Image 1 (cartoon, rainbow, N blue to C red):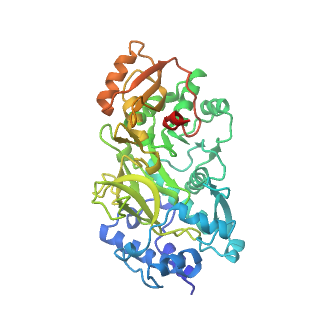
Image 2: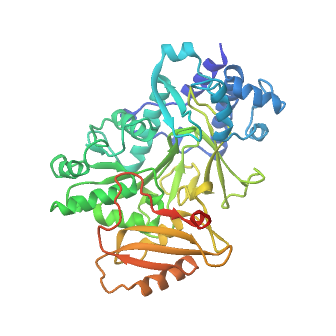
Image 3: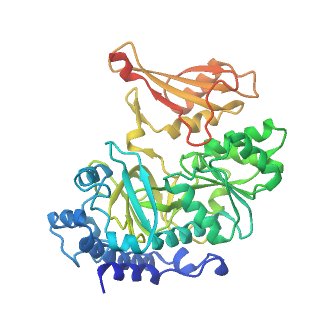
Length: 469
């Protein structure tokens, strides 16, 4: 039996029936932490040997680290595996276009069991392309269906999927999960925004999927056409692509607008195509405190490391998110640095799941962290502060400029006026200083002045480099 066959057998050993079993099984969702460790170790050993046998890129990296087949058998051994970042793949892709040699998927296996090709934008002219097989499709469907069941989505309910059905993973993974769960899907990603809003009163979808920014915009469009989003029967909003669903003020704004529960769903194209993180109804129902986003730990290994030393940080401290995939035939990559900040807790959840939770979801990307006046800020920090001020509109923009003195910055927040016309710029600036801890300039503009987004919102502009032009 090849290493690939041994890996696939280990993956399938821990699957269980789908919708007919209610997509809940304590063996996967609520094992003891000791049993969860056993499941991870069995899959990890098989994934390592598979990569060593079939990926020239990883074989070289493993040999350079003094590793051989059979070297990795426990979670303690995992620390011997070198961390990989997406830039490490670029020379391999340049030398071996178009796929590179980091995936263990062979041409023969790809021809016999093809499914789909996805891509991400790259730092070179060559995009990073990811082939996936029918095995991957089946696992994506199963894992996404598990997450959807956790959100409260049930068979037979209509779902409007507002993610774009392009060469990215979010729309397709959620689509396959909805189909696996038994939900009819409206593929609304390519619909004109006005048409998307117009079909909701007629189809009455129980579930709508999209980015937090896009679902805020969609709800306002529904209001503009004379309908109340909260009266149209939507029960569940599934949000991905932005951190808003785990940002308290944004979550509450979406809940009030739609009269629905709001759930966070996150992953990434390179390593966690199916949901790495997903909320349960117990966490989504919180009215205060930070939302905890479950990690599907029977399918991945999550490490939180110091971004400089790459040493583990204690549970409860922030660090960079490093993930090992334990289910994908095409992408069983080990110790991939997603480049996101995360903070974990691993106490049992009220829902019964024993998987660790990301406190507040993904906190922000390493390369999106803004250093202003000597302090570091994630975009979600500004989102939380701005949206916590009742009476402001949905849209805002944060602009950072070089200050008059070297090494100093000026921060301006442009935000649309909302229903509270008594709010002044001075009042908002004072409130934000108390929430963020630094002085900001505030400009209030009329509703509709700032651009709307049906996908990911662009709300941060760094103009400090313009001063040197």
